[in-house]
Image 1 (cartoon, rainbow, N blue to C red):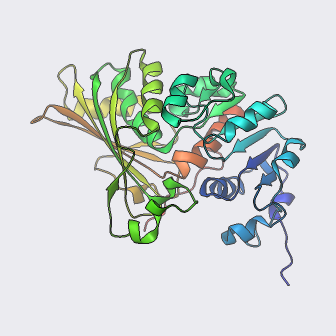
Image 2 (cartoon, helix red, strand yellow):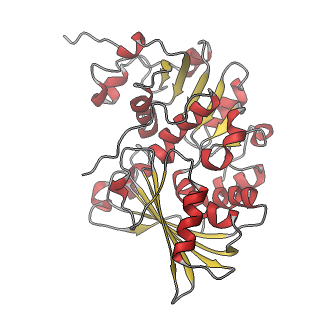
Image 3 (cartoon, rainbow, N blue to C red):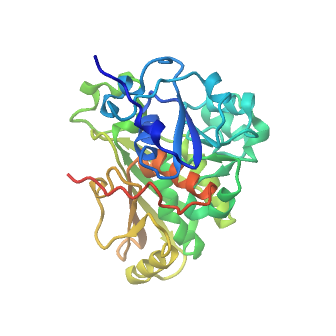
Length: 356
C-alpha cells in the first residue's frame, strides 16, 4: 500500500493560498509552479467532482510529492488564506466572487469573467448574464508588464487570456510610441490543444486534431473584446483588431503573428530599439533576433518577441510566442501573486524552457 505524504504541508511559506478547481490543466500547472515557491504554502485545493480524493490520483505526475486531499469550495472558504486562485470555467468564477467576495482573501481569477469592464460587452460575447456586475470595474487586468501598479493593491485580479497576453505584449510598445494606425491591426494566432481545456469535446478528439490544422472562433472569439478593451485603456484611443485563432496539433504553446500599419516612416532597427527599451526591466520578456518558436518558451513564463518591418508591403510584423499554460495562465497568475505580496516578481518562476 502506498503511504501518502503531502510534502507541501511541511513547507512553511509566509503566505497561505488556496486553489479552486484542480482537475484541469491550469489547476495542475499552478500546483507545479507553487510547489517550489519559497514564500507560499498551498493549504487547500478543491474539486467538487473529486472531493476526498488525492490530488495525485487525478494528476499522477505529482505522486509522492503533492498528495493533498481535494476539498470542496465550502471548506476552502472556511480556511485562513491570504489569496485564492480561481481555476474555474467562464461563468462559474463570477458566482464564487458574488457569493464570497474578497474581504477575507484576495482573488486571482483565471477565467474570463472579470477581464471586461462592461457587463453588456461580457454578455454579448460570452452569451451569459453577469451575476457580479459591481465587481467588473473593481477588477484589475493582470498583465504585469502593462498594469503592474494597479495589480499591486488589487483585491481582485483578472488574469489575462492566453491569446490576449501574446497579442497585447506584441502591440504595447507600438501603441505607446504612437507608431501604428489603431484600426488596421491583424492578429493571426496558433494554439496548442491545452488551450481548449481538459474536458473532451468533439473538436478536440484525437482523430480530429492529429495531422490537422483548423480555424475556430472566426470573427467572434472572446479574446477579441479583451484585446481591444485593454489596448484601448492602455493607449487612450479606440483600438480595433481582426483576431483569428487556429488550433494546431501540439499540446502547449501559442504563436501569434501581428501585422500593423505604421503612421510614420520606420525601419527594423528602430523598432528593435523601441521594443528593447520598452521591456528593458522586465523579467520575462525577451526581444530575440530571429523569429521564435513555441519550444523556445515551453514550460516557462517567458514571452519571446521578434519585430521587423516589411518595406514591400509597408507593414510592421511582430511575432510573439508564449506557453499558454504558463505565461498564458498559471505562471502569469503567480507573477501577479508575487506583485500583490510585494515579493520579487520572478520568485518561483525561474523555470528554464524545455526543448525538445
